[in-house]
Length: 386
Image (cartoon, rainbow, N blue to C red; front, top):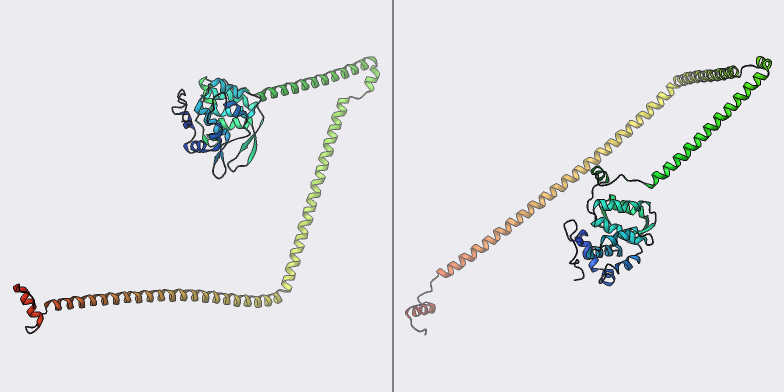
């Protein structure tokens, strides 16, 4: 009775709302202690108090796959099917974070795609921490935006298979939803505007400084024409200095290249001398080395032959052992077969002897002088035995 869906409830996605949770998980929830103690006589009003008391979110955990209170309250909401206005208030609530998580999960199960995107996407800006209990019973910390992202993107969450929803891009193409406007875009726009203003101000200050310098130089020339004639051109001097600096850099690079070439040549010569010396030494000591090599080669050959012989002998021994085993097995089989045949023959002989003995006794007739014969005759004639 307490586990049945409310009679006024409407079917969701073409089925009973409680069937959105799998049967095995549903039966475990109905048999757990939290459901029997706290969820037996709950209503839409008293369910809020239990939601406020939640301390973590999760599905089933532990070796016996015990359901979490969060999942029990989700099943109770599916059973009662509260009004959508209450669910929206759960989601908009900012005082109790687990109440918002409960409303988001329930709306993801029963809501339409438009409502899901419209009411869950604002929670992307909610960074409150949540305790999530994993299947092994351990806790980990997540945030509200991660929880909502898992609800929207994943197909299964908290040991429940979530209903399929259309992607946001498809709904935007159909004109059902408007393009999403993120709060991070506003921050990026503000930062870009501030950076552009700073660049514009710096450029303006540079231009003003150059103009003031040019104006002062022109005024000096007008006042002292002789100084202007004696004064060298700054532009030409700067160009000549730049050319000199470029020439100096080129000369330094050429000097470095020449030094590198010299080093390479020296290294090549050293390598040649080393190779020649090694060749001469090898020629001078070739006789001794040849003798030592011949001795070592003969020793190595003898060792390799011994090893080969050992290997071959070892392999032969293995083959012989295998053959002996096969022969023993075949002999045992033949002996067992012979024994079976002998037993069968003995049994047949015993049976034949018994049959012959029985037939002989049946065919035997008593003698006329014996008492048995006369007893049989009296019995045939119907007379009493003597």
